[in-house]
Length: 541
DNA sequence: GCTAGGCGACA
DNA sequence: AATTGTCGCCTAGCC
Image (cartoon, rainbow, N blue to C red; front, side, top):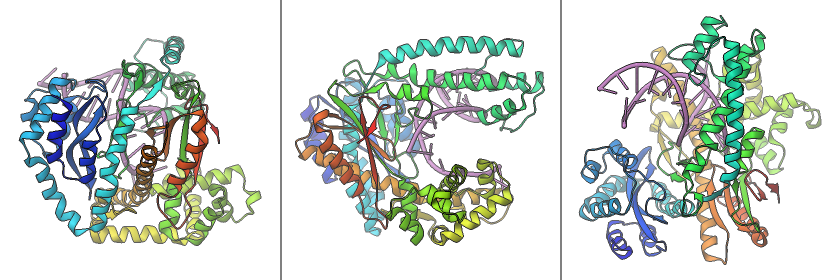
């Protein structure tokens, strides 16, 4: 099947002007049809759109994954497309023909999509705007990033694999010696037998199926000083995680053609409107530990005179909160570009900014995040290691300082009860129904969860809205101007580019402008930019 | 080969 | 019970 054939099929199938435009602008070797879904009003809508692909099979799109998603919402009877089997088939030329054929034969598919979508979009101009001006144009941005991929230093990963491998060997020997027998350290079940039955250590936390052995528990057990085993297992888990999930997995996903990894960004997975990333997931590359950053340093600029450039929103969720809360004090703090955690600490503890201790700042940071997640006094107490009573007073003091925040939370929950959904800054909706339940203990638990979801969705989802606008505008700039730079990744509040050195200054200026002006909020948006030869060793510019 | 559970990486 | 949203590795149990 030729490019012209595929384009011809796409033309009449896809109604949106920007998708039609995408069809005309196809500039790559092949087009593959894949499902791109869009979440509107809490419901996922799948559609089929053009996507770029360098070579058939390059990204290992599996029909199984596609069929599973279609079966989940029955927009398309995919079983007719691929038969009843659930084989893992790489989407090669043959399968491409079948997918394209199907799209051509069943012209009903997009009509059915719009049958459902149109009444909703007619009812809400804001949703239509979100759909037409953000989600649909974003498809092309995601396709661009997937097409670009990012270069990986597989040599470095190979070296790390050997190093981690020998570390694991010696840790395994040591753990078995301390345990007095050999067992599978990777099995929480077997580890539980050793720790809690054989050694008689106290059970600190339970899971559905038995005693928990997670890092928090192991840390507590280590503090008891009765055995070196917990500490060794913590270290073993850390190394094993990095080795299996990143160091050994990433090289296998490097394309032979491009020598890069090409993730898949999913637009219709996260209920809040965030993107997600898979195969490989490039939104959870380690950064917190020294060894983790070494993995991150394996993501590199493609030439010696190129750099990676990472631009991230500073405190975007707290700024969104300040915007919605209409809280003067919080907004002033951002207007003055203060250290927000230190500022909150000084106001909650009622001390001068210069007298804020690191402990006070840490507490303020915890409560700032707690607000975003809807944390309780219990949760805050636990994360700060303080009394629940003290935590409750701390929260009360926070709400006294920032009354707008409490008002925002109340308003959000009131609207949610009235409408059955919450809305983000661009009007994206998430259905949240259990906020009305009152009765049993189980319902109370569910209601508390729903209330946290409601609050968090407005903040997390609005932040996602803003960066999507920025991505569309940034790509528009890259396409219209005389740029060599390429957009590679989005990690929720961060965009990663690759760029020739002599273009860095211009790119920084353009990206900062587009991100900071994605929307006009009650508080300024701030973007920090770093560049370097790899994703770990980036310096501010 | 499939699924659930535990765990842990990220924002 | 007790802070949101993801993806993926491994084990264990089942078919």
